[in-house]
Length: 521
Ligand code: SIN
Image (tube, rainbow, N blue to C red; front, top):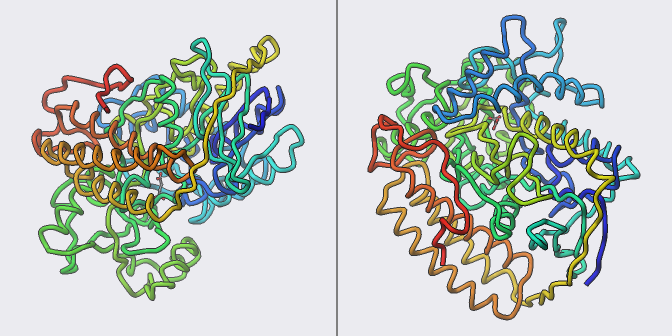
């Protein structure tokens, strides 16, 4: 097995990992690992933007309140206040390093998304994530203190004496195993949207960071809260998101009969929280016997529409949808996991020297549903706090090495695994999706157990990237189900028919899952 050593090991290359790598490189050597090429992350595909208080009519209090409102009563106010207070500084840093946000005479051109009571989304047309990712990747590649390992998939964390001391990786291109020992190990591995057959996430989003952390003994929290974005372009391949900004700027949701429906369910109509819009879009689809609803922006000024949303315009055109003339067929899809590895406001987990930031972390910011465009902001704010906290510890600590773990690479080809993966994704969508009930969750639990048994047989020969990914997806699927069964109320993204009243009995706030709690055998 090949061995490496570094002072900081960052796993994941979205906004959280890249921002941290750049800042951490001032204090020590950094190894930055990504499963695919650096850019292939959820950040890259983010359209809307980064939320921050810049408007004259805006305030810290207002952004905090909107965050708490989206979180449906269980976001942590202290954490939300840190995020909102630090967001403008972090966004200005991005501007300074060259991210080309849309500007007007007053400064940032701000847009609006659901549940934001003010315009506060800083954006770069409809390719905000792409613009940020490309700029950060360029900076990271220019930085001599950052060693980049692309196409390396994390397999396990290495724990010794209750401390995290490194990680084991598959070198995907060379089919080799590599261990990296480090003083600080930071998970910035993103989400798990690929657990579902309908998702806005790219293929890399298989919950690897969540699973390896859990197996290493980290606590996961709020895992029942999977956010479904109301408007994925129906039947798009590769999957394509239609940004919430279109609704923020007046886009209307209509059913197959061309009738608007959101106002009849919620006073904020199209700008109700995402969980509400997704839930009632599914209900409307069921009522009208349709596989999708429509987003109508044909009343927008055509010139403005094409200039403000060039990416969405171009992608829709590939499906012969002209935004200025046609309604866009859309459906809800898994988008973001609000829970994750439990951390404090410095990214610290319950395992010494193991940290988590970005989507894979749970700071309790998002509560039961995430406010639009708070996610990239979160990645910046808490990653920066992390390095500010640990920079002085780095000099004092030593890199610890441990016995090498023998890993046998399995020759099993992807076909078999792909079939099991598809089954898992269908089960998750059908029983652990937007509308849940106890019976369905138990069916899902049982069916996933059967998939796991089949995978265990294949796993006997050894493992590889695909097998490890599916094992991770199974584990995280099981944890989502367990968490959903334990929450005896409907709240935010967790709508369960057995408790149709939305949290009239507030009996729990955040739910943690650790190895003791889980009966995943
Ligand atoms: C969007 O552009 O609709 C996505 C924004 C987000 O997920 O915060």
